[in-house]
Every structure is written in structure tokens, then in C-alpha cells.
Amino acid sequence: MFYWLMKRVFVGPLLRLLFRPWIKGAENIPGDGPAIIASNHLAVIDSFILPLLIDREIVFIGKSEYFTGKGLKGRMTAGFMRGVGTIPVDRSGGRASEGALRTGLKRLGEGGLFGIYPEGTRSPDGRLYRGKTGVARLALESGAPVIPVAMVGTDVAQPIGRVIPKIMRLGAVVGEPLDFSRYQGMENDRFILRSVTDEIMYSLMTLSGQEYVDMYAATAKARISAGLPVERSVSSEAPGGRPAPQVDVPMPPDDDAPTDTPKSHTV
Image 1 (cartoon, rainbow, N blue to C red):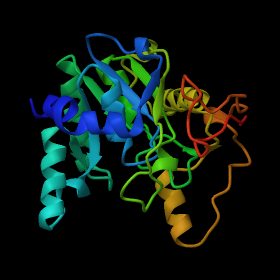
Image 2 (image 1 turned 120 degrees about the vertical axis):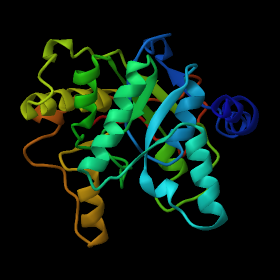
Image 3 (image 1 turned 90 degrees about the vertical axis):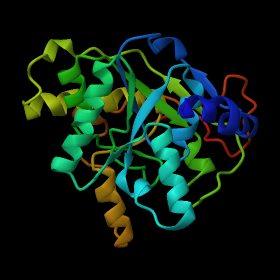
């Protein structure tokens, strides 16, 4: 109930007015049944804009820090995240992350939509980073299709460090469902998990037009904090070691986006 109140009555109408969100490929999201929504992650606002564009309720994984904040702001953030069904995940890995994945499997087992950011954290610079294999485990253990979704423009509206997003058009492009049933029963094979994850990331790359960096986003953030450069891998231009596809950054359907919306370019 809280989810739909926020979406349709309180937060949703304001976000629609300010950001006029658009979506392409919405027909690729099944009307019922379990599915994994795997999205690139450019800004905090991704988790607000994407649910607006999907008719069905979607539950995301969220970093555990959203649930442990202090003071009024911290309590309000935690309350909101719990209200919309966000599942906390400890990004240190191990048993804590395993628990979040199990909760995701339960959600899928109930026939719902489960959202996940395979990069594990926001991109530090707008590029697409190496995916973590948790999304592959979810797909193989649940048997649910993976729906790739590319968020567009959110990093321009809300770069890291900016709390209040700039008012501009934001959107999403939904790709065709990815079926990994051919790997059923192989969820403990780390090579299969990496192959499946790379296929998902390759799809995100073709949808978003982002440059790919064969490095985990968390590692890139650590390098940036240390004043070190984050270069594209010399051995891989696209996930799985494939050549980079020639694609464009998506634009709004009516082409009336502000001039600071990302322009089309080839990777």
C-alpha cells in the first residue's frame, strides 16, 4: 500500500512533473510472473525514476547504509526504503550479501519483479563497469528471465555528491528479455556465472551507449579517491572480451531534451 501511495499520490506525481520521464521498450517487461530487472546505475534517483516507468511493483536491493542513518533524515530515509520494499544488502559481501540474494529469490518465487544493479554501486564517472555475478546466480537459481534496463541522463541530473537533482528529462530503455535456462543447474560454476553476467552487461552496454571499463565500480571509486586514474582495460573493450559495439546514447522520443542531456555518440 505504501509503495502505491508514494508512486501515485505523493512522490510520483511531483517527479513526473519535474523530470517528465520517458521509456522505450516497456513492452519487454512481462505483465505478470517473475523477472529480474537488471539496470545500469548512474545516480541515486535511478531507484525513484525507474519504478515510475514500470506499471508493476518492483523491489530493489539497497545498500545497508540507507537503513542505519542517524537523526531525522536518517530515520526518514530508512522508513521510506522499508516502505517501498527495498532490501538492505551489506556490500562487504559474505553471508550478508548471501542473505539479500536469498530474499531476492523469495521475491521471484512469489512471482514478482526484482530489481538489481549488477555493477554493485553507482558509476563514478558515467561509464559502465564490470558486473558482479550475483545477478547471474539469481537468474540461474530462480529460472526467471533477465530484463536489461539502461537509465539515461540521471548522472547528468544528479552526479555523485549532488543531493538535489537538476530538473531535466530522464528516461530508460528496456531491452528484450534474456533467457539463461540453458544453464539450469550450473549456478555453482564460476565460469558460467561470469559468462552470464558479461552477457547481461553487454546488453546494458548496447542499450545505454556507455563506454565499458573492465573493472569493478567499487575499485574505480577507491582509485579515484586515491588520486589514481581509471583507464579502460587494454584487453577488453566490451564485457566478455568482445569488441565494443557501435551504438548511440538514447535520446528522448520527442527530441526536446535540454542541451545538457547526453548527446549521441559512438563507443
